[in-house]
Length: 227
Image 1 (tube, helix red, strand yellow):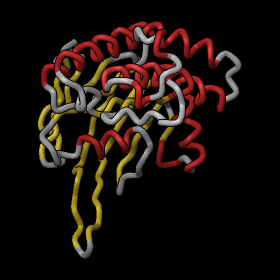
Image 2 (cartoon, rainbow, N blue to C red):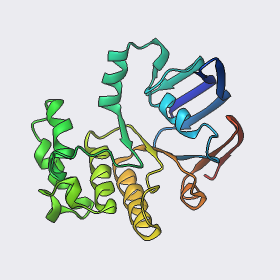
Image 3 (cartoon, one colour):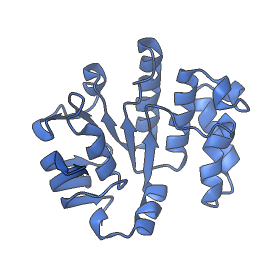
Image 4 (tube, rainbow, N blue to C red):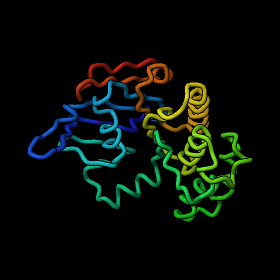
């Protein structure tokens, strides 16, 4: 199976005042296409930083990241943005829906901006898949947290991404709602044949994936495959 993500010798630090804070040390791992993968670890272990680097949202101090057969460090900001638009999906803990757009518009508008003539049709189909056909014309403020995250799920799959990054997708949801969202996430992911990478502190969620990477203090302490 082809590698969709290959990370080699990754290091990342931030400068705070006069202090340099090292966040990630010599990170090496790879993810095969169409697999599910979790990054776990305590708060401050570098999980979200690693996710941002792998998705091309930030640049490392050193090391390389190959995503969808492209070396991110060799791409310009514009080329990086094109790669994300065409190949990558995102789900965030705080949903990040646009408040002035309805549920349907939140899904369809990104597709329309890419020139997809079937944007509204795709949006309606995805809303049906996440069980929200009857909420299509509601705004985020009129939706519960679970409903907002289901809209965010639909939006994440709208551009048929090769790889989907989910940062604490159940972090703001109660356990019952979180379980429903997770079931939907894995269901949609399997149907689409997408690679799924989840950052989570929820070990039960992590155990549903095929590979678990554990971070502690910015270093990999375990890389376990369950397939």
